[in-house]
Length: 299
Image (cartoon, rainbow, N blue to C red; front, side, top):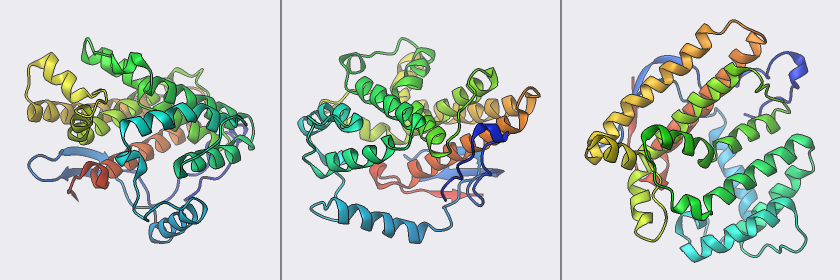
């Protein structure tokens, strides 16, 4: 469900989409013995028009940029050389450099969509700049050579590395809302939400990332960091992280409950959007074929 475009001057973010996510009874996400198990108060639900939206979006993409097959997953199946070639093109595609000519279907998608985004104003420019910062970090030698010195060091690094700032920029741009980060409470909420997003991703994506490492990709994952720092095996490290994720949710809610300062209504509404972001990421990580996880939600 698209968000309404309401400026900050109205005093609050637009109303939260109904029937998507909200705090609820504790759920557990369970799979087979090797699948992550995460207890959460985030209540993830499919968007009510999912069955209508998916074929419409798929049809649009296939009509505009036909892939070889309807089920092509270029970013998951391309070689390392193909991925590097794409990354070299990204800055020009995002900024609309006339000297950068899109070749592959993926490049044409990036070029067209970011051209439409850039035409929408100031917040779109900030979103494009944030996108480029993330891509440049992902393809830098520093990332490939990065070795976490501690779990805390890893949290600081991934807060910048994982693309979370790009997600926040999408939220700001899509709602035409300036986020008042001069308020410490906003930064605190974003910190805990960011930890939740990339730690959930780490737990579910770990085995895939190990396979990609064998092909030359960098392994940047908290499972490995916890294994090394605490002397644990894979399963034990995953269990430790799953418990830590529960504590992250608790810290996020504590920040919301204790805040009684300026723009309180805005802060509470923004917290709800971050909850929805966390819940959506958790459901996607659990269900997507990319991580080959077969799991269910249990009350």
